[in-house]
Each structure stands twice: as C-alpha cells, then as structure tokens.
Amino acid sequence: MSTETQAIAGDPIRFSDSAASKVRTLIEEEGNEALKLRVFVTGGGCSGFSYGFTFDEEIADEDTAVVNGGITLVVDSLSIQYLTGAEIDYREGLQGAQFLVNNPNASSTCGCGNSFAI
Image (cartoon, rainbow, N blue to C red; front, side, top):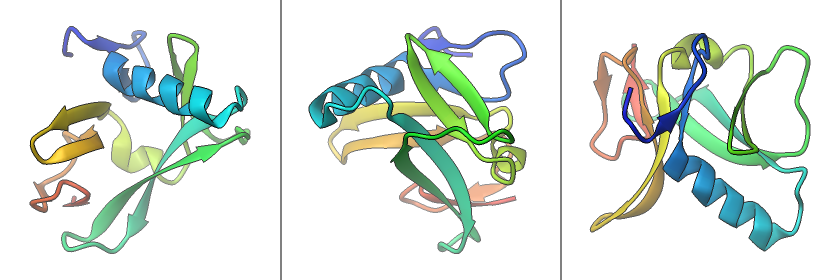
C-alpha cells in the first residue's frame, strides 16, 4: 500500500488521498455535499472491460463504500469482484489529469489505462 493511501484493514478497495482530495474539490464546485464517487466496471474497451467514474447521491444496500477524509467512494456489487484489492488514485502529469485504477487483478491493460482484461 502506498503511503498516500488511506485504507482501513479489511477494505476491499483503496481510495488514495489524492483521489479523495480531487473528489472533494469537484464536490465543492458542484455545491452538493451528498455526492459520492462511484467507480464501476463495464464490458467493452480494447482489453475487454472498462473502468467508469461518475458521481452519485445514493448508496444501494449491496454497494461497497470506502471513506477517506469524509469523502465516499462507492462500488456496486457486480464491479467489486473485479476491483477487490485495487487502488483508486488521481494523477496529474504530462498526459493530463485523470483518475486511475491500479488493479492487481488485471492480467493486461490498454495503453490509456481505462480498459483491462482478467
């Protein structure tokens, strides 16, 4: 686990400080404190599966939620099977700014990092 990641032992997914900080900024810009970052996996993409990110106000009973610094990351029950052990991070660099999924379950990823294979 990176030193930047906040996770409680037993959390199925890690939510980095930089990702939580960026989500906090986006929530403040939206002016809606009820928003949570939802991460999901869909079929498709050049490697078989794709990661998706959206904001959501709701948490379903079967969702997994991880909190870092008062900011909540939510994963649905179907996606968590592909994301268990992964870290959700946020990076800014020469290629731009983006949320990243560092997923140890992926056997391969595409060049952009938004799709993967198991």
